[in-house]
Image 1: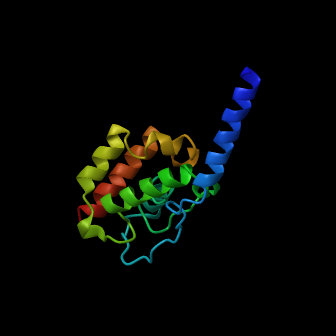
Image 2: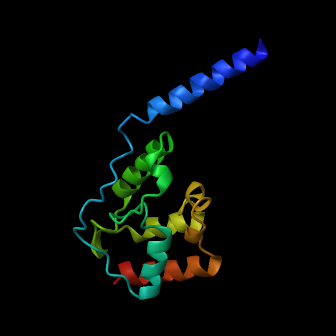
Length: 143
């Protein structure tokens, strides 16, 4: 009896997993065109920004394989949409970036977010890299 119930539960789970793959949200991986770009103070600052921020906060997102599999595709699409709304390095120039808020998010450890850096270890910044990035942000946006 227990074995039969377990098989039914597993079967229903697999069927639901297959069905949710047909939900279209999270599948549109077209990056919008770049309309403006930040001019960074140095190639090092730009490299840190690209490494830690650009996958979510730009129109140059690299969509990983799991962004095609629901329900992860829903989470990834939502996170990128929200990130671009808050700050998009591909649609804002130096005068429109809120440097203080960006620095606050980095210093507090909220950015890049832990759920991102768990999977994308290259986005983790050491303390020295965080300070270098913060210094570069100040130079870039307070001219």
